[in-house]
Length: 633
Image (cartoon, rainbow, N blue to C red; front, side, top):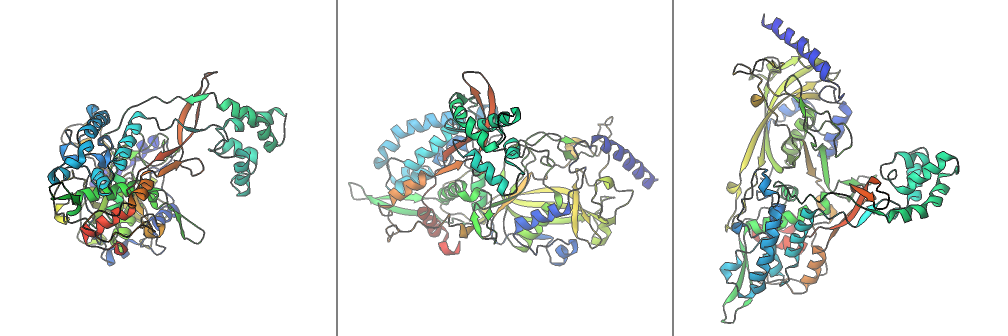
């Protein structure tokens, strides 16, 4: 009777899922095995990664932690000026929920900082040693360099202010070929085999097809007035450049910084790679008029803030690119999955699925349904299990980004048909047959399925504190459990899987909402992450974190560094990050022709100041606080 009921439910669910499966993507359509394996090889940077279910068990990888526990700190909220905030004096808590009152906090921060410049920073030489300990991390850094103009601190506040005012996209707009020559670019695309003709490139390519001269040239070709697309571009270009002058930015000024926005991607990458700042360190900056020494103390959390900022604004945050020999070229991050940009729907099993185009990819992709469970499972087993490396998880299936460094995981297996956890692994593995609720969604080579309950362990952020010592016991580790099944081929290789909202998927009874309904919304598990990413294990080869060469030697590290370092530090503070169609990281924005009123969507380009602290200062602070030499980071 039980089997008969299960079969009835499975048939009902299949018919309901068929009605829902309009998206033709995961979870209703099996992901190609090549795509799964390609992403796992890419993120692990290991051609010999483990992909067999029993190999994971036999090598003792059902439960593992990273070789070194990542350290915790704040995500340093952008609305509080990042590390330019003297955190213990903050009147608003760091970790508010997404309340309406918090979105304008940046305005209060800016007002408070303007007052602080007149009442505190202006009289910095009059502060006592105790008062100096209360400075913001960036203020301490500036003062260590002898910079009483507080260049880094001011740049961080300016970054917050411009971000809040939404006025970054007011300078460069790629409406015409003013940024990159259209004819030259189209010709290259054809030479590279991307398109069969220049005309096709002008029509289809996302960089070219929005430009005025592309559209005017295509109109010329369509009318028959010209047959050569390059000649057509040459003819229309003067008119396009003149027309370009009439367009202005037509974006609304949102004036909004969400409470979750900060530098969590800087912290979460650095925390798993850079040694933990363990103790406070002090420097003597000179003598007061009465002969007493001026002491400047950096707490471990001050140093963590500087490290997090350094990694946040570094080019390492760009996608890793290598040459044809696999040698490092640029960037450093390897990402798997997609950011959720729209509310997902639930199928009859309570599983999430996407029905809208993802605004970040421009395609209908599995995003809010979570990163594919086979990719997730294999990444855990290989990155943390086999390699002992931390990686970064975006832990929420939602639009806000909430990055955290991973510390560990554990796998528990259950029977996918009964939901029972058996001590014998073999009893948790079942052949695919009519009782399988997701049979029609499986990869065709699936022979077996096994249920998996995974608990991930990651570092939670904490409000920074002014404590002299920091250790692993001061961290907060959060555990989050999720459930899914894995699809195995005849050799027990992992080739797919399905997220589950309950251990045994069964269709919801929409007419039953009482306590007996075992699949109520509040009981369903949606803990799967949107995406995860890792910094290449060859990050040191990038040279992005090397000490700046050619500087005067800092011999006595109980005192301030040489005054000559300040000029080099200002170059780091002035670092500009170019967002351009050339590099594939331009942003879409709306413009309007002030003469005709015509509105267009174009690629906006800008050079954004992404202030970084001087590498030499950051590396030496970490060395002195952690006891680990830079070459051993």
